[in-house]
Image 1 (cartoon, rainbow, N blue to C red):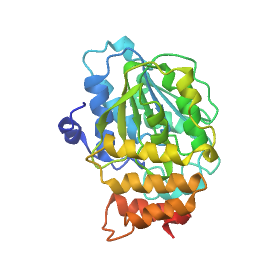
Image 2 (image 1 turned 90 degrees about the horizontal axis):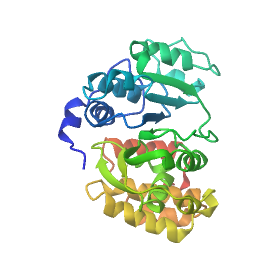
Image 3 (image 1 turned 30 degrees about the vertical axis):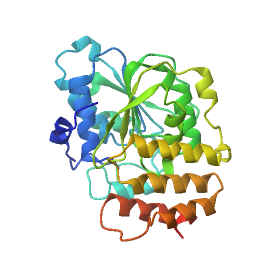
Image 4 (image 1 turned 60 degrees about the vertical axis):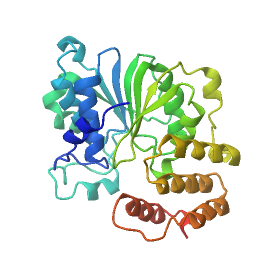
Length: 304
C-alpha cells in the first residue's frame, strides 16, 4: 500500500492551478513522481484540462533524484481534447486565465506555455480519447481524469490498460464520482489484473497497481454500452467496491450504484437504493453534499 502521511504533507491547492481536483490528489501526484517513479515507462495523463495534476507531476519529477535527467525528457505525455467550452469561462473567472481563451478554440499551445518552465519533461497532445488508439509504448503510471462517459471509459480501458507495465499504477480520479461509476464496473471485471493500493483521502481518486497482464478475454467482458450493464453485474460490482474501500463513506458507493442503475435504464432500482440507504438525509456541507447537488443539477431522476 502507498503511505498516506507524505501525501497529506504535500496536499495543497495553488491559486493559479484551476481544476476539479483536490489538494490530496495533487499531493499524491507529486509524491508519486518524486518518490515512486522509476523511469521504466511513461507517465500518461488523460484529461489534463488546465493541468492541476500535471503541474504536481512536474513538481515531483523535478525533485526525483534517481531517474536520470535524460530519462525524464518528455516522459509525461498528457492528453486532452483541449477545446475551450462555454462552462470553462466560469471556472477561470477572476484568474490570470480569464478572457484569454475563446469558446471553441484549441488551447493546447496555451497549456504548454502555462507549464513552460518544465517543457523538457512533458508533451501535451490534442486527442479525442473516445476513439484514440494508443501506440503500445509502456506506461508506468496512467492518470485517468478523462473517463467522463461510458464510451470514453471503454476506449481508455481497452487502449491504455494493456500497456501499463506490471507493477505500474492506474489512478482513476473519478473512481468515486457517482456519475462515472462505470469505472468501478471496469475495475471489478479486471480485478484479477489489478489490486487497490491507495484510497486517496478526501477525494474520489483510487489508485491500483497492475499485478497481471490484461488479456483480450478480460477486455471482451467490458460492456460496450450502458444498456449492457446487467443488474447482477451492477450488484456484484458495488458489493466488491464496499469491501475494497471499507474506510470510504458508503454513501459515495451507494450513490454511484444508484446512478449507474439509472444509466442502464433501471431508474426504480436506483431510487430504491437512494431511499433505503437514506442518501438524501441529513446532508451536511462537504464533498458528499456537493456531489448530490451536482448529480441533481445534471438531471438524474434517482434523486427526485
